[in-house]
Every structure is written in C-alpha cells, then in structure tokens.
Amino acid sequence: MRFFFFVAFSFFPLAAYAACEGRDLRPDLSADMRAQLDQAVSGTPFSEGNHWIATKGDTVLHMIGTLHTNDPRMDAVMERLAPALSDADAFYFEVTKDKMDGFEQQLAQDLSPVLITSGPTLIDLMSEEDWAALSTGLADRGIPGWMAAKMRPWFLSMMLGVPPCMTQDEDASYGMDARLTDLAIELGKPQYSLEEIEDLMAMFNEHPLEKQVQSLVRMASAFESSEDQLATMVNAYIEEKHGEILHFARLQGLETSGLSQDVFDQEWGSFEDQLLVGRNNNWMQHILNIQDQTAVIAVGAGHLADEFGLLNQLQQAGYTLERAPF
Image (cartoon, rainbow, N blue to C red; front, side, top):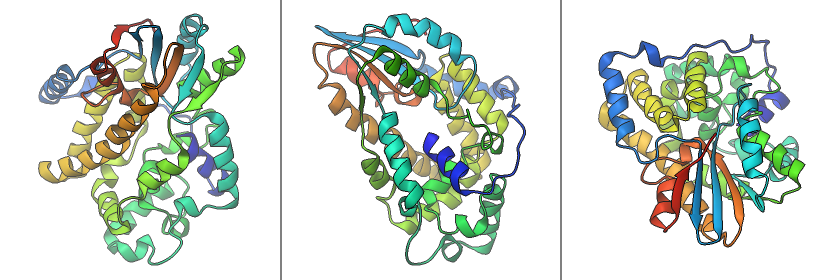
C-alpha cells in the first residue's frame, strides 16, 4: 500500500479529494449473502484474531495481522500491544521500512519496474470500450490516461484498490505495520524482511503481459475499491474478523464483476495463489528458521487464515497456538 501511495504522491497530478467517509456494507447484506458469508467464514481455519502467540520449545512467535491502511482506532490497539511485544528479540515484516525506503529512492529515478518499457501499450492490447472504462476509474484517482497506458496491469489493478479519497491523505499508509515499525525502532529491536522487493516484482510479472491484461479487464470492476468497501474492510479488521474481509471481497467481487462463477473462480484463484498462497509458503521458510527466541511476525491480516494461512501452517509444524489480546 505504501508503495502505491508513494508513486501517486510523486508522479500523478492529483486532484483534491475529501476525507474518506464510507459506511460499512455488511449490515445491508441480503439474508442469502449473509448466509453465504457466514458459511464461508465458519469453514475457514483461524478466521478471527489479529494477535496469536505460536509456541514451540523456547521459540515464541507473536503473529500480528496488520492492515496497511491508517485508522485512528489503531492507536488504542498499539497501547495494548506494546507491553506484550516489548520483550521480543526481533521484528519481522513483509518488507522492512529501510528496504522500502531504498526501493522508493530507486523508483524516483527509474519507473521501469512498474512500466511497460517496450512493445504495445495497454491501449493497443485492449478494446476501446475496455480502455475507456479502465481509464475512467484511474482518472478518478488522478492517473492520466497517457501514463496509465504504459503501466503494468498488476500495478493498475492495485491502484484501483485505493479509493480516490485516500490519495490525498498523507497519513493513509500509516497502518498497523507502520506503527509496529515505529515500536521496533523505539525499543531498539532489529528488523528483518520476509521477502525481497525484487522477488515480489518478479512474481507480479511472471505471467505474460497479454494474460495480465486479460485478468485486468475481467476483474477491473471487482478490484475497484470505494469508500464504502474501505470502511467495511477497516471495521472488520478492528473487529479482528480478517477471514470475513477476504470472503466478503470474494462474494462482492463475483457480484460486481459480471463474470460467470467459473471464470471468476479462475481469476480469483490466480490472485489467491499469487498474493497469498505462494507468499505464505515462501515466508514460512524464514519463519521456521527462527529458533530459541521471541519474535514479532507482522504481516497483512489476510495471510493468517485458511488452510494455506500462516497460523494453520505453524500448527501443522508443531506449534501451539493461543489467541492473545489485540
């Protein structure tokens, strides 16, 4: 999230937007949709809880599910968490702030990691109708068409996930991971990354450009986030219902995309495999190497739940799991 805000702040002629004032969409769900959501959540291992303690021998892992988006209610959460985390020997993040700072400095000089640097642009690879619909959504976020046409599809899909109201909020990316970074600095604890930015970029670009464009066109409306979707996500996070966040996004995405169930499941499965399953498996290789110490593992809350989630994988690896205050 911080990466996308950095690009937006640095390079796009953004318009002035009002502060986000969305409303939680869950109370408006139909009885059928609510039943589907409840059924999906009930079948998901570790679907709730933003703070779990995994213990095996002398190894203690504080598993903290984070949200990269800011919300003032997180201040109270940090007051509760700080004493419990003060004895940690190290903090582990998806990518540390220092590494992100270094990458942002490089990106300020060279945007090629997020640009199509040769060959056809998105205008050439889409129908006029699809390009018009996509460029309208991006224009709402202050991204001009001439720039968007040269951007990689995976990057644009994630930019669509940032509601326009957030692009002028300088504190928008001061979420839980940023707060935990500040705590680690305050405590003088070492920080480590669970992945390298270069590996993340390579993962995003592993599919041919044409396939990326196809997925972007199919899922553009499902990816596009509104103020109401943002409010729903943040509220569910504060309630520690991270499993509900993903299942709600999936159900709503199917409804808004206009795709058949089979096609949507194919696209969603690809998204899940890439951003959740694959990364979780890679992170576990690092996490299981943490031995005989107390560590904080701070990653997006969506990585905790489900069969492929970090919590279930730790349990399968012999760790005892206990939900802790958040």
